[in-house]
Image 1 (tube, helix red, strand yellow):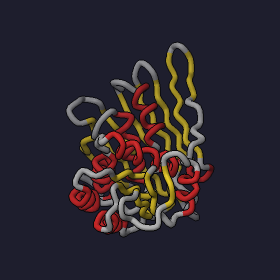
Image 2: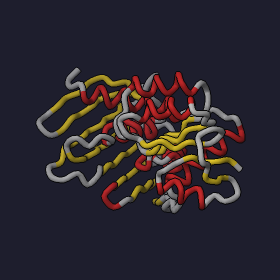
Image 3: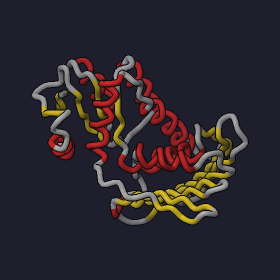
Length: 256
């Protein structure tokens, strides 16, 4: 059983839901530490490891830069860093990737209020998942309320498209739909306002809607951290977040 050091209530609940493998800890030393995903998340990861953490979970980071990811990779030195991205759950992403083998075309549409900090890197992440790899940015065009990114999966001829639309009014969270077209069609839909995320696979045999995940993203992230420590297996979360941050940065930079 391993200790989990956190002041975030949702993760304290998740610890209680893992009574055989986790317990609340009173300090960072020798524990999994959960840090908030605010502007200082990268610094907080370094502080946690300096204080003796054996693994870190980052709770839903909003402000993500390539430099932040590089700094975390340097300080982690191979120790597990789990990135909890509720709008890009690893279990749903794995299912979408499994069914979306060798797509011929990938398109992702995302809409959110101005200033929504997660919309672009979440959309870039789903594009990466559906395309089956990192996407090279080839062109970015911008209008008053929308951005269009044209890309291609790295090392292939698979075209990828990402559109980001700015919505007027209060920030109610992002809405996203992604499609990968191949022998089967994989569609992802995320509606943050209603807390829903779904993967649907359509083929000649009919339509499969992947069952809803009832496990919270907090519990899932803690389980992944515990499993990574037990197995010694490397975790690719920071690398993938960096890839998504680079695409998001290209979108923000304007025409290219």
